[in-house]
Length: 319
Image (cartoon, rainbow, N blue to C red; front, top):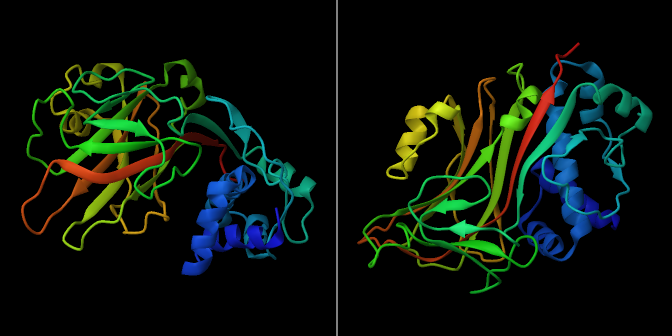
C-alpha cells in the first residue's frame, strides 16, 4: 500500500476525512483486499487503545504520538471462531517512538478478539420466511442475496444482501408495513468458558447502502444484538422482534443511521454490549425502515447490507 492510501485510512478512523477523500477511500476499499484488511486491523487496534487510554499513561502516549507507520500484507479472512490477539505488533504496527516489542508486551495480556461472524454473503443461506431461528441461516422478512445491480456494488466480494419487502415471501401479496428485519442466530454454548466471568464485550457492525431515491423517501437502518439463554430463545417466529426485546438478558442497538442517496457510499453501523455470563445464544438483527411523507409501501426500491461482523473481546483487568 502507498502512504497516501494509509493516510486515507487514518483520516477515516480519526474522523477527519473530507468528502472527496472519503469517496477515494470507498473506491480503494472496493478494489483492494489489502486496504480492507488494513482498515479492519487498524480499526480494531485503535478501538482497544482508546478504551485503555484513560487507565494507562503508556497507552495515552501511544494515542497522542505520531501517526502510525504500517507495513501489512493482504491475507485470507480470519476463520470463524478463531482467537487473535489485539496487538499493534500482530498488525505490523509501529507507533511513535515505541518499539513493536513494547506494544506487544503491554497489550497482549489485556485483550484478544474472537470472531463470531464474518458475513460477506458470498455463500450465505437466506430463508426469508417467518420461521423459527436456527444457527447458520438468515431468517426474517423477504430478502435475497444478489450481485452488483442498480448502481450499487458489494462492499466486499461479489455478493450482498438486498431487502425486498417488509413481510415474508410466503405472503401472496405484500402486506402493509414499513420495517424489514433479518436475523442471524449464533450458538455460543461451545465457548462459554471465554466469557463466563462476565467481562467480555460483544461488538457488531455492518455496512448499508441504497440506490438513489426520491426526496419524499427516507430510510433508516440499525444493527441490534440480543443475548439470550436457552429458555428465553423464542420458539415462535411470530412477533420475533418483540419476543427478543422482552426475553433478552441484554440487548444493544446502534444509533439509527439515515441512508444517503449516493450508491457509491457504504455507511457503517456499529454497536456493542457486555455479554452476560449466562448467555447461550446471540441474535443479530439487521433492521431497515422506510418513512414516506405520503402513503408508504412494503416494497423496498433497493436497500442493501454487506460485511456483517460480530466479535467477542475479552480483557483482563487494567493494572
